Length: 308
Image (cartoon, rainbow, N blue to C red; front, side):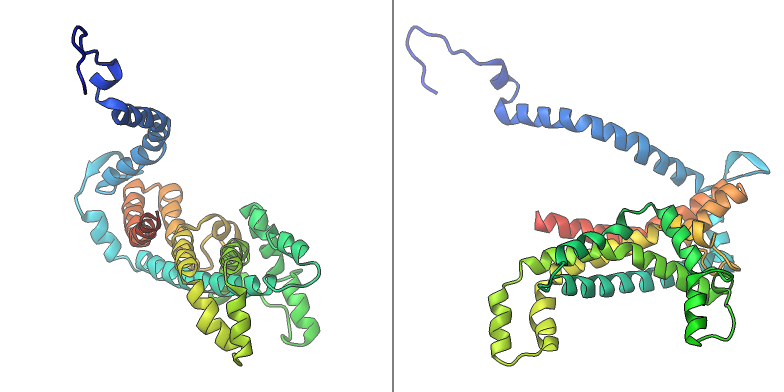
């Protein structure tokens, strides 16, 4: 900075407070303030409240929370019903995620091919995703209904079963139903991710591979899947996180039954909190539930930050 004789150095108020970058930072924090306030009220405060209640006894016989340390967690480890919820959740997440990814990729490969009516079929493929989850549960509840369900009618007409089957009344049938419902609901979203990735694939590379004699299987494994690897990684992580949190259609379709066969962690927390009014135990299960989601969430955020 050059001083001119006979003039005094004037420092602007902006410069006195740290310059333009400091002003930009303050403006940025002001823009973030509404979102941070909403986050603190809606997410952070309930989480901290649940974190504290997880170490207390707070049920119908104990109207005020009483600190019990790790007693709730020891009870969880000694209760087969709750441990079974973890196993049921793992089974559901594996099959629902795998089914959604495989069928979403297959449907994206079909819709990526040129044929008449492709645009209309792409639009119609999004219908399951835009339907409310309760409507989805009602539709699949009708499909699996033992008396007038379309699945029994179809199988009886084909001679595949001798009499109507109560699908939702058996553990395997109920688990199959909630997995198929979730897969049907998730295919449009996953298909959109894969289709966007396929649009960026170099078509000349595929044509050159076909000229060299590569078949469909070789093109899929040597060219398409390596190109879609970043998309595939994000889709799998998002699928795992979403299925670990899933509640609405499972509760509407089976309510966690029969005999707790579809009682995933979200159903178990709801049952403990609002059926049995054991808030302390529900909070402890919820904390363990969050702990199962955190690794996938951390992996996803790290991947996003690396991409940014």
